[in-house]
Length: 90
Image 1: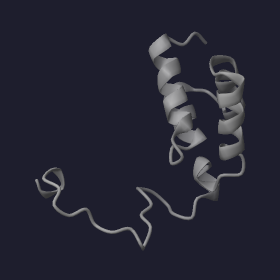
Image 2 (image 1 turned 120 degrees about the vertical axis):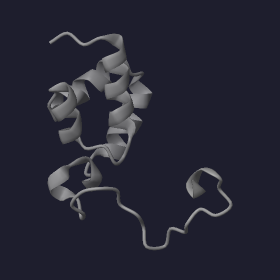
Image 3 (image 1 turned 45 degrees about the vertical axis):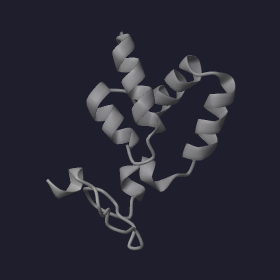
C-alpha cells in the first residue's frame, strides 16, 4: 500500500493522540498496530520514537478492548466546565 505524505502525517498525528485507538487508524487507513509502529519508527527521529513507544505501551486508551468506556469521549469527573468561553456558549 502506498500512502501519500498527507496520509502519513495524519497517521502520525493520530498515533500521537492518546485517545485515538489503533483500531481507528486501522479503520481509516487499513494499517494494523504493528504497521503503525513501523511507520512511526521510519518517519520519526529515534529519540521521538522512543518517547512515543514508552508513552503508548500499555496505554488502555490506545486499544478499544481495554477502554473503560464504550463510545464517545472520556471526561474526568474532576474536570470543570469551561466558563467565560465565547465558543462554548454558541
